[in-house]
Length: 194
Image 1 (tube, helix red, strand yellow):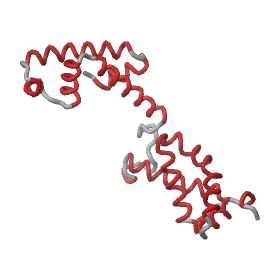
Image 2 (cartoon, rainbow, N blue to C red):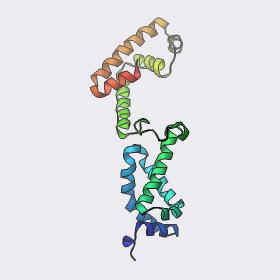
Image 3 (cartoon, helix red, strand yellow):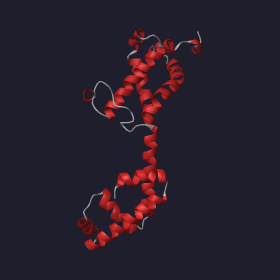
Image 4 (tube, helix red, strand yellow):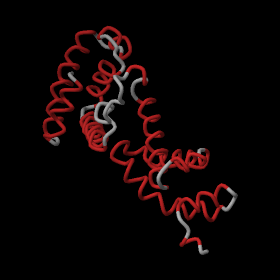
């Protein structure tokens, strides 16, 4: 029987018996299904979980008989790996009231990933647009969490100069953020709270 005619279950069995071509063929066949199942739940981590799922399929091949078909077996393994991933990223199973948190609660949706990337890009762009003396003072204060006295010491300037630079830096930073994408700006200003 040609490899193209073999079922997924037959390809898995052949792969487990050492036929790497069968494994390659099975992976090419099931990858799109697994990817679609996992992508909107975990975004950038999809390929890693697909790989973990395929390893679990090989390691737990004796459970294939418990499932109606290979598709349900594959999705069972994928679901288990997805839950493992979500538990590691979120809360422990015993903390959950009988179910895992939604992917939205864990901020792993593609929209949230893209939103964070857009926000981070906007913040970086605004920071890079500040004059260097203002950029340094705002970064030291908000990201390094130094006091005005510590900043004054680090920059060898009076505390009053740090305060005035910080005030100017805040005003200019917010102006630059507001000049950017209005959809991202509100989120950035709300999350930065400078």
